[in-house]
Image (cartoon, rainbow, N blue to C red; front, top):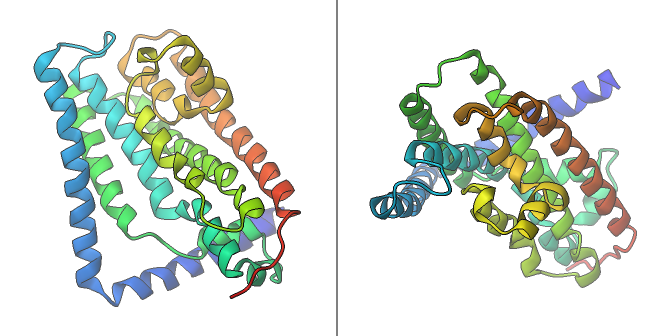
Length: 265
């Protein structure tokens, strides 16, 4: 098990180096893409400023707290965008028949899809998310040992996005083509930017149990910005939820794979 894990880590590093080398050949496009993503995110963030220009809080959450939640959500999503966005690219692989080449190699298919390309546009998202999150941490004066858990929680959130991508794109095995359902990950990201408490009871249950989008940012944030007595419990639960949800999505993906038939070009 340990040897296999080390093998996959080495393979991922190798693929990442190749992908970075490929897009660095066009360094101007690379830089412009990063700047464009940062500006796009900045425009979206302005909505928060406009909202708090009109009101003092959102369901008890003040500006700094919402800023933390927004930054946490954006960073978690950006990690997925950079490294795991191919989980929604399955329609492309099935439509073109490129999935066949992955099936012939002695390496996990999902791993190959994730490592096949690195989305440089996600770097703009990641830079923006880290900046916003850092500003929020400073404004909230979070300087405690709690910050040690932050990387794990951010990675857990990105794993949930990857799981959603796998589940939604699995439909491609039945449609053999592009489906709008793969874009649901982007839609769920919009929900994660705000406290779950603003939604109705049904959505609260859905975003906590069925589609645990609440664990990408909201529940971990309670540990940092609210005097929530179960905050530590939520921190411990978040990685468990993300891993379980990924295992479920992995199972769904493998079940759907049985319905795959080669299309070719």
